[in-house]
Image (cartoon, rainbow, N blue to C red):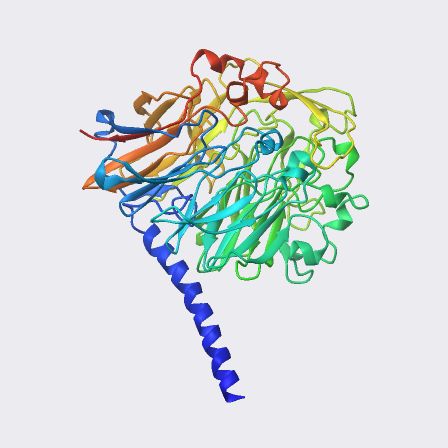
Length: 599
């Protein structure tokens, strides 16, 4: 008995050692501003760098240091990683991965290119994008389009293990960047437009074995909530909180996909992410709140159990996916320092919440043209507390099936899509790439067939009435819920932002410009046109005593799907082809990493 006890204790001790080791390594590495080891820059998703050799005083002198072609001509989202002297670059389908030696002129150390069935391409909703890689424990992690999660040896590129995370024949695909937390690799799933019951899954870092899976909708044991302990706006969610809000078994094809970004608070041991739109896009076919689609989740990474949830858009009628990043930043609110979470939702509302208990602190429009709602009911104790107040004129269900609801702002791609914002502790401001786009939305009845589109709506997109710009890049005060400054852009800003200690904020444009602006004023300090439209996320690192800024260019994604896939029907791409038809006059297909530095 004593031997069994000792052996068990040793096993538990070893497990916690691995647990701590993997997490400690990433926390330490991510604290080194010279490297970029997480797909989000840091666990808090701030995309802020302490590097300041490139600053507001000299950024105008930036020059191209070197470039690298991925060899793929589709939308390039995400950003490379830099671990030590090696940069890891990824691409869209077929998802090549390159290891480049920064100490030897970017020499290719190895290349991994998986063999995937091209039949996965038609079930990828909005281009064949991939949002990036993860690193931990000497491995590089890639979530392939066919949902294979693969662990590669960081030194050789050899496959260490691989696991299938979904089934493309059902419409499940992989586009998101994995996130390593402790001894687990966390990854979501795409497929909301195909009626997938979506989930977040944890895999063991060493073996690849599945540890737990948490669905967005379904019975409590599938969504991993405790009816009495899991709360929403401070109240227990209660038993069957999800399935009570769906008609019959429709939750089984309910969507709520999880292809966005993951953040993590080590002190609270909670990770955060958003779930997407319910299926179908025709709200008439799915009565109820459709929980827990369109929801901010706070979960324990050890077992996946949810501590709190908050549904931003109950019974979504506009495809306002809730997958955008959760930025963790401590802020002074009401005379006290609050551990806040800031989220810029597709629905056009920016939320500031207490990330420990899910208390709603601020909910405000971050684009002045948002018109589907007059705002969120902030009256505690009200039966509609925390719910947006829908204006009937812009309700696609109120107007009925086969009726075209016009001039809804924002469009389905939201006031911001997955393109991540940044936060600067220097200014206390959030820097947000936005879409300034409205739509006509006509829902129609659709039937479900596994592996076939399950959309049920036709869209048209265009700038707000009387305006021509389709994008703004803004600075946001999350404590007050207001815009501090705003720069107009001709097209949506579909690039992730980067804030630095040099007082500079970087972002890219759909025409292909890398831009640098003053963090305090928004004044443009530098721009350079790369070979293709930028939908990648700007990152920075230091090597050999010099600071570098890098970004992937390669037009595509939802906004650029017309160019990426050669589509011409204005209604194709769920309305994006017509909305962004003018983009072809400014850029063309490409797939290149461009790296900048000072002379």
